[in-house]
Length: 351
Image (cartoon, rainbow, N blue to C red; front, side, top):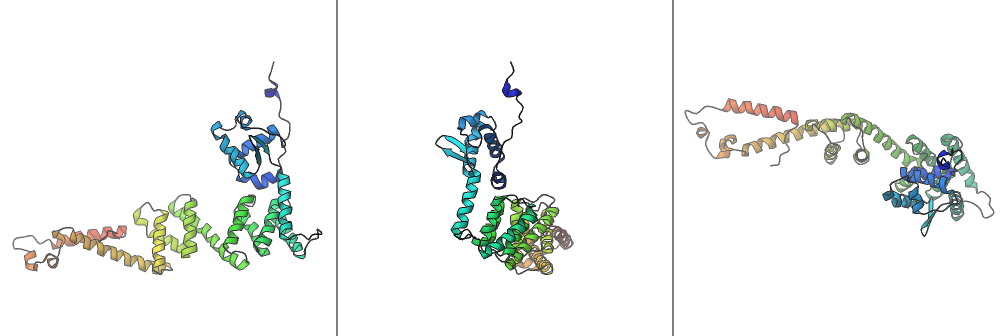
């Protein structure tokens, strides 16, 4: 007799609220997302279960079960009651939060009428919905529009730019990422068009310099690299020409790190260097200084490198009769050392 559980065709549908897709799914780990979908399919929206039931699904290692279940509870998609779990009613949560927020902030009159500025808000929201979401913008993002307008006091055009930025950076479908971006703009004072334009211009430069440095280093830039590049632009106002020259100034090292380039840019900034021409002068002076340091260090390395004055003897005593004149040999050695220094940018040895 065959096992009906193995022979049964899966022709049923599992209903997942759109709000889960729009607000929660993108922030969950792969294991948490997989487990949640199976929980809804297995136990339903109104069902309850415990951790033993979850382990029987055999979807994830038992050792990870507690961690993944905690992630789902923390995200708000599961409710824990003693040892039992049940799916949260995400639609009710969404409606309650939305209405409570609007009433608390006074967005709606007590008689339910729409305020005058609410009409402008509706026009803006409809424009965002049509342009970026083809008429299917999740309500959670309407709430983000309200938060930007009424809590963060963004200008309407700044709100529109937020969604444009989200689309260009492929986070427009990720509610949490959009919310973090809005909060970051508010914290940094990008609430008006003028202030925002300065930020967006620098953000564009970050993208451009990231590509430039990636080509120079012949590897993909990671988050740490991008953090450094952002600092160079925000703190040092670095442009592409300065970046390329800073990289070139470190070529003698062979394996150039991001921190090597940053050290060079930082030194230039401290010295008041603002363009490639002045950077070239700075590097030339540094090169000469390094050569001088190396020569002094060479002089202290042994008596054969000291001058007569340094050794406290006369010139005649330096060349006793019958001894070979090494001046030509010494001159040749100096030329070789100078050539090496030219290749490698000088020595950074301490005095």
